[in-house]
Length: 80
Image (cartoon, rainbow, N blue to C red; front, top):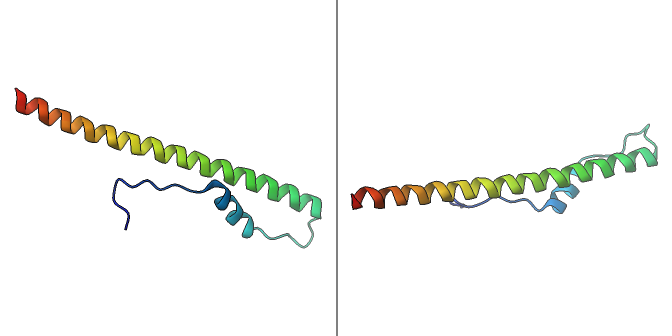
């Protein structure tokens, strides 16, 4: 089980490939249109996963900074 400070990260390539797996070709769709749609979907999923990982990293850093500030505050309170 993940702890509350564990980061959740996505493998961007695996995520994008999984998204494509749920996107079948439409009956009336030409191969070229389908391939373009798949490429667009893949790139969007890849970028979204990368953005998520960046946000998760930032949130993890913020949590660490808040924890550090609480510890520093306790040290200051005990000192004075």
